[in-house]
Length: 148
Image 1 (cartoon, helix red, strand yellow):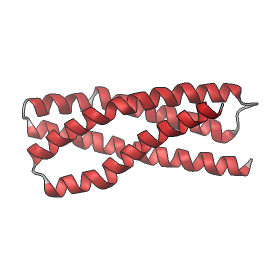
Image 2 (spheres, rainbow, N blue to C red):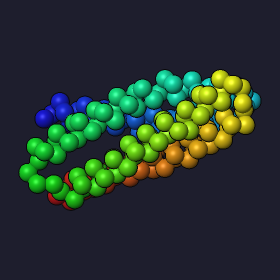
Image 3 (cartoon, rainbow, N blue to C red):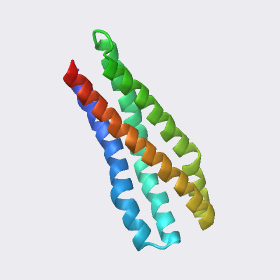
C-alpha cells in the first residue's frame, strides 16, 4: 500500500509540478525573450518531451488511485472529489494532446506561425485550468484527510 501511495504522489508531482513550471516560469520568460518562430518551436519541443511523462503519470495515477480506493474501507468525500477532479484533468489533458498539441506540431512543422500561436493559446488555457484543478485537488485531499 505504501508503494502504491508513493507512486501515486510522485506521478502527481511530475504532472502538476511540470505544469506549474511551464505555466509560471517558462511561459513568461519565453514570451519576453523569444520571437514567435523560436518560441513556438520551443513549445512544440517542450511538450514533445513533457507529454510522454504526463501519459505515464496519468496512467500511474489512475491505476494506483483506483487500487487504493478499492482497498479503502468506504470512500471518504475527499477521495470522491479527488477521483472526479482527477478524471476531469485527465480528459482535459487527452483533449490537449489529441487536438491543439497535434495542431501545434503540424503548424510548427509547416512554419505556419499564426496557426501555431492559435494552438499554443488553446494549450495555455487548458494547462491553466488543469494546473488550477491539480492544486485544488491537492488542497481538497489534504484538508479532507485532516478533517477525518
